[in-house]
Image (tube, rainbow, N blue to C red):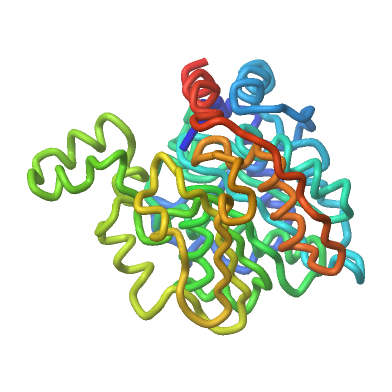
Length: 329
């Protein structure tokens, strides 16, 4: 739940040109009238060590994508046959959340793609709009990647809200036949508590529009018990044919109790960071910049070449100041 970006005119033109150059599985007529294509940044940007560094760089490079990602000439190999698609979190961008993980996966030999979804026209931030529409944007981007690369399936990795909209695509929009692995980092699988504000708003419903004005539609739709979350979880957490993995933290600042991140059902695997490295107290905001989590993710995506992550002390609250500064830079 972080970020603050600016897609200007040339970015939208570039995305539209890319859309027009490819044949996608979902036609425009099949989408709701308010549906808009996701944005696909193409300017390669350097690695960053945290959200603040990524946000500062993107302020002067608004069309940036993580180094090695969105190379539409990339072709999957026999060893790594599925392209990896990365979906950012709320109030974020592909670069702000994936500036470190994207290059790591590309260097490891994956074809890696990412998008900026859920933004208003002329938006300066992404992942703030209707989750149903954002899930459709994920689906369309999957079709783009499959068409261009010739792959049969992709692997989806979502951080925070990105885990929600990618799982909705898989479970509810027919995406299971096109996805091999789904991975959720800090996934609000059954909704977030918003620092305990959700129970208060449930008791005083007039607070919900206030929350939405202060945050965004997407934040409210991710709350525990929201209509979107109820629909996502209806019929079970998983569907056959997809391998699901959650990677979560006991000290997640946004999702409590942390056990609600876990998925239940066939194909579900749940990893808790502190069960594997008790001294790593990474929470929600630092998850995508934590080296231990990064290596866990690599092992999930490439189980044939696992590496033992280096367990190091990470103080409680790491990444929160950088995320706040990044959102307001």
